[in-house]
Each structure stands twice: as C-alpha cells, then as structure tokens.
Length: 387
Image (cartoon, rainbow, N blue to C red; front, side, top):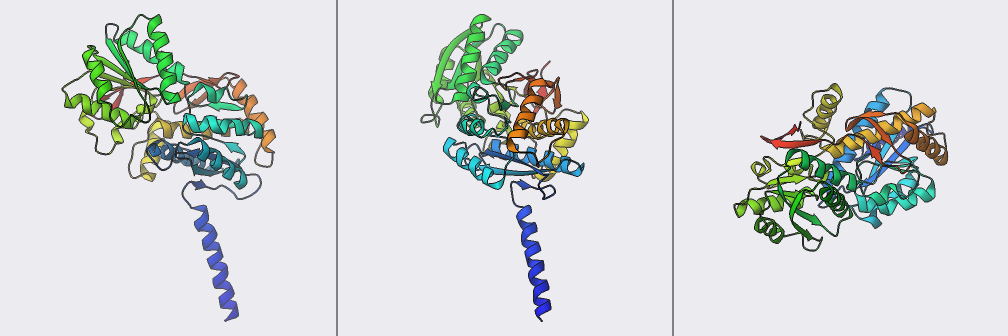
C-alpha cells in the first residue's frame, strides 16, 4: 500500500507540474538554464484587453513554432497591466522574479513608458510590439519599437490623404489626454500644414469625456468636413461612427493602427465601418505563405477570431529576438546584460528583418523602426489593401 501511495503521489505531482506549464499566458520550451525567458505586460482585462490578448496570442504562436524547430528554446509569460503604468511596473517586476531574460513589452504607450525606465536601469533588452509614443524609444539605447512612432504614423496619414483625397475637407477628432492619440495628431497636423491640406475642424476629448463624442462629431459636420481623421482607439471610434450615422452624417472615416479591432467591437453595426480607411502594417487577408500560416494557427487557437496587427506585431517581436540571439550564438545561459548587449548590437546593425508586419525592417540607434506604411479600406467587412 505504501508503494501504491508513493506512486500515486508522484503521478499527482507530475500532473500538477504539467498543469502549471499549460497555464494561460505561459509557454515553455525545455525547462533548463539554456532556455530564454521572454516576458510581456499588456491589458489582458479591461477596455483595452483586445490589444493585450492579441499580442499575447501572437507571441505564443511564435514561441511554439520556434521551440518546435529544436535548437534555441524560449519560455513565455504575460502579465496583465490593464494599460496602467503602475500595474505594468508591478508586472515587469513579477516577470523579473520569474527569471525573465528579455522584455517583449509593454503593449500600450503609457504602460511602456513607465516600464522603459526600469528596463534601462536593469540593462534588460526591451522590444515593444505596439507602444508607439516617441518617449518610449527615447527612454534609452536598449529600448526598441516594432511599431511606427506616433508622429511618423500621423505624417504618413497626411501624405496618403494628399495623394488620394487632395480636395477633402478634413475634420480631426483626437484624445488630448492620451499620448498615443496626441502624438499622431501632432505629426498629422504638421504634415497637413506642409502639404496644404484643408483642415476645417479640430476638436478633442479626454479620458473623462470620451463616453459621448456627439459634440465632436457635430462640430465636424457643422464645419462641412467630408473626411474625419480619428487617431484613437476602436472603442471610441465605434461610438463616433454610430452617432454620425444616427444624425445622417456620412463622411469618410480615417483611422490609424489603434482602430484595428473595430470589426470585433461587441454591439457595433459592422455595416457602419464600410469604407473606413485604416493605417495598418498587417493584412490578415494576404495570400503569402507566412500570413496564411499565421492566420490559420491564430484562428485555430482563438475561437476562429481573425488576428489583428497587434497579434502580428507580437509574433514579429519574438522572431526578431530569435534571429538576433541565433546570430549572436547566445541562449539563456548568458546574463541579462550579455543578452542585452548582443540584442542592441543586432538591432542597430541588421540590414533588414522580414516579418508579418513588413519586409526589410531596420532600426535606428534611438530604437525607432523603419518600414513601409500601408493602409486598407474596409470593404464588405474585410480589409482590402489600398493601391
């Protein structure tokens, strides 16, 4: 009986260990010192959860693919920060306690800015998938971005408008309390002035007043705007578009990468998104092998949901780190400082990284990325590339 009891206890301990490895947000390779531990923080709950969940899911797929190759192995873990700076720092510290070697976060700009100072102080390499504020990359020489900076995205939007809608009367609505939205707005307005675009209305809201954007939409309508530039997130955008429809106002709506996800907003009439223009580096309907493979795996693991650009950004973060460490011949036996130095060197010197969100991507010494901007138009409920 003692032997039977001992066998049962051993089996229970193994089962418990296996259950821990399969916990949400954690993906393991070989559990030894050579394994590189990648951590991230992002909003996995709350109003911005769609972004964090997508990044987490994209990173997990990349880790699974890489580990299946043999050779360099990764272990991955995500912490929920609810897009809050203080919670992001707490999550970052929890990941350090876990033994994190490389930081693949944070997802949102405010959270990433708060964590960046910690990563610089720790000499922990940081590659954010989607935090696009200028201050993030400028935090230190070991902080890099996989996404465009806000001003660059704003300037690209203005250039596209000048090319495709040179005679448009443009209304601008932005969130003055959000670094992401304000950064894109500033970049857009500077380029719009340079290109002599006709901006007929500028109106803002804040985090305290974003529940009702009827005033801002009405101001654009009264000014005669036939295009509205909305550099903010999809939740607020769905409110603005819904109200415009309610009052019979039908301008062309133009959003940036934060708009990616509007087709998944619960309760939103998807027909109202028809014709919406969206800046995004990732098209899930592309037919190249890499995109088809990623979309197929993502849908299989996420209740048939189509991945957005945040998922693709997360995927690219892991693969860029993998390529850099493979080139350096390093694994988890190296110190955090050694990994950081090797990663910084590779990102500063690479002649071009090919990922889902761009080909030939490079970074400058400030950590900002260079890749070709792209835009899509929502047509019959799917993204259709422009051009």
